[in-house]
Length: 384
Image 1 (cartoon, rainbow, N blue to C red):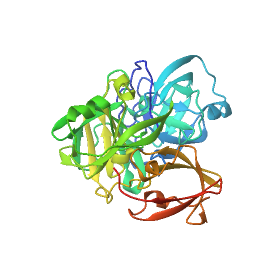
Image 2: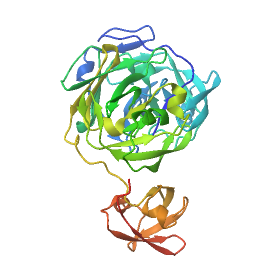
Image 3: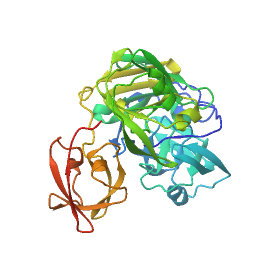
Image 4: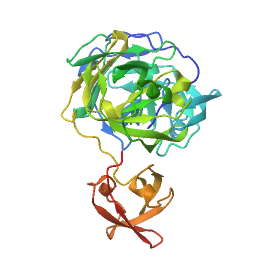
């Protein structure tokens, strides 16, 4: 989960029509509508594609929840970006330090930005970015985004275009920092403002206060682990029905609930709508036209993939490391701990193999061999 909001209020890009140039140097080509950009989804549900910065091809991520475009420190060094000053920024997972560099020339499909600036966060890039460049709303808010998740492609359009029809939800630019805001309903309670964040791999995240305002008491909560630029975050998690977006009831949806006083509260929002929800649709984000349009894809009603083991794992060479043990899970009840390592499952080495058993069918028992040679048996079940 990747998302960053800087603490200062930066001016957003004015709207741009095809062939016109905004004051901050953003140009949209007259044929931008025809320039589809293919993308992949990273393991963290981030939109990963190829852009060009200062003439260099660069793997990029599309992040509408980011106020200002950023690059990794490694790429900044390779591209010889000259930093100009340093300041503190607030991010999911905690505060970070950033440097600023001149923006140069950035090309994304039919959009070109000349000038502006780029932030260089002082954090390890591995596992945090999903690419060397993360393009934020300082660039994207000028225009409309047509993201066709089912076919894994997107394009940048002039604001006001409506290339397809679907369910329409309100969307607006947040004054001062250009990120898009919408709303959702749960049990008749309107939850707003919600940041629409393509850089957040989760489906719906709510602040503790926003969740409490719904008065809902009928679900079993566990815990899960996410990553922001500021580091790891642990939130409560549930899978439930009852949400509606654009006036249409959603199928079962994963909800994450932040601790009291966490990131959403600090940013003055009720929470976030992330890629974990949006990827079920073809999505038009056009905050300057006041709308988010969602056209259901083939996976719109697919069930949520949920853990039945309670082990959240990271691959490390020849083994798996336990990153988090979910509360109330089979793993928690049988004494698993963060940091333990697994070398085999049902007698087969785990290196390079998908971890399908971690979310396997309830009732299945898996024999797990730890890297110290000991063995434990884990019976999978539905626990949240």
